[in-house]
Length: 258
Image (tube, one colour):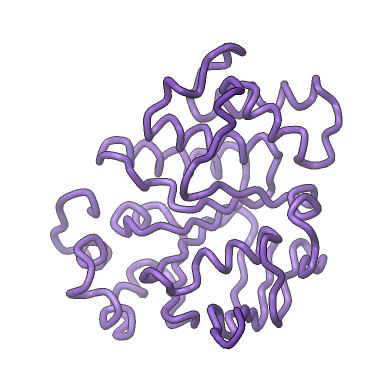
């Protein structure tokens, strides 16, 4: 479905992403992990059209996306969530999601956008009451709203950016199960960027690891957990990552990083 080759992003003299290549098959959940500053968000911003690549190719269903504006990429079928939800607080929950529906897959019909919003809200478990306010949502509710907005655009490929941030342990499990449900029931392919590795490792089909803008590992979760470079990057520097590596290896793991 997605073929990325030699992707590079430079900001002046700084190279944030250096020659990254990968593929994503239809129906797959790919986990994208790495320390802060490793290039994960920059890759998402290039895939979604926020940043144009400095070099390289992004092909989605055989069509080159490099240089397309974000709304054109959404219309092609790539939706995304954002790490920090920023809803329109003067609009209701329903109106926020319906507004996103107008942008997806060239939907220029109010009825179609509202129908898409109802389906998306039902999928994530938020109320479809058209007057329900955004201000009543907590951290988990805002994450659900962010996901509903992305789903309302009608994506074939969903870029999920840190869907677990700010959630407690039970909410993390619910959010992870929801991503798996979206793939299984809607057939949406997912690339998931996440710092809470223990939860991610239980859900994804494959994992790709970035460090300083370069891909250092890719494979099945248990394979990546045994990769010496991944161990070097994570072990002893991040408690969540340490627990995740232990869990992927079949050892004990506890706490929110499980």
